[in-house]
Image 1 (tube, rainbow, N blue to C red):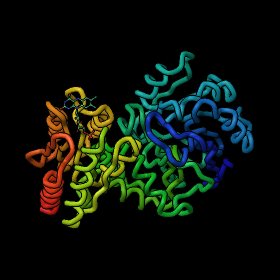
Image 2 (image 1 turned 60 degrees about the vertical axis):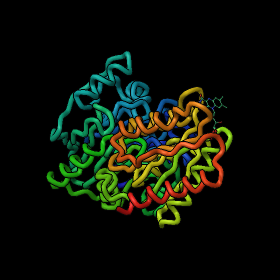
Image 3 (image 1 turned 180 degrees about the vertical axis):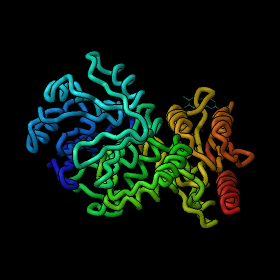
Length: 394
Ligand SMILES: Cc1cc2nc3c(=O)[nH]c(=O)nc-3n(C[C@H](O)[C@H](O)[C@H](O)COP(=O)(O)O)c2cc1C
């Protein structure tokens, strides 16, 4: 498969993980790739490695281009193990004393991952390393998405090697965004929603910083998925997603149910929204992965959560999604809570409190129905949907 020469003397030597479907709890419909970049100039640099288990393939990819011992340095843009898991293996092949350039937090975090100490050399924003004809510059991107994260920019080729930012979990033979076409935007959006949404304010600042540095960018090379030969497309998408302001008139109804009463409510609420012209996505939690639910939440204006009462609380799958959503900090949402109950009916209050804690603008009062909704109950749900729709439009 790989390597691919992406510019003169610059190769993607990474690997494709076709079969992974659960990436630390994120459902990767299409697998992923662990991209790593080899720059062959007067000096030779390897930027990032790959997940443990793929190290032999990385070595083979590099060996097809150059003797690995000719690598003069490794750059670690990000400590997470899908990019550093082969680092010690590779250093043993390259020469264990050769420098590993990383951020200050990179040095600290790499040392916490690997027992054997490597020759870590700290670089900071604006530092430059000349490889001969090509110059590497570093951009501090701490907390995007780990404290150690940084970008490496290859000045002469106008290539930004962006670590996890702008990535997508996508396994494919295609190397570049335009070869895949629009489908890639779904994977990029899902990646943003699940990995980066909580850092949206930092992303807005980073995009401003990159603009103010006046960096010319012909290509963005993330550590997962395809490379962006049309960088403007993904930069514009990030600007929009990170602002979380230009939301679609869409409502996501996230619910679970034991005996279908909460489900009947969900579908009637959906009818009410639909009648008012609002795009609506009912998602029964046990039929969708939480990472797909969050992808829909990213650009939705309203998030409506329903749960039956179970043992004086909410249904566990609803708690799962709300915990996940809270951590990702969606902003500027209208929220609403509903659910069926038998005798005590605590679920709706719990959902209300959670969504209020996430600073959602709540629709009041929430909607509770005892046991199975009858015709009047269904009408109430339709009315609730219409009320939410009016708030969305208003
Ligand atoms: C195991 C179990 C525990 C329940 N615990 C409560 C409870 O603590 N309080 C309550 O109001 N209803 C409780 N219920 C009743 C349900 O909330 C009620 O049947 C509701 O209509 C179920 O909605 P659903 O069809 O959407 O699952 C319980 C039901 C079951 C099956």
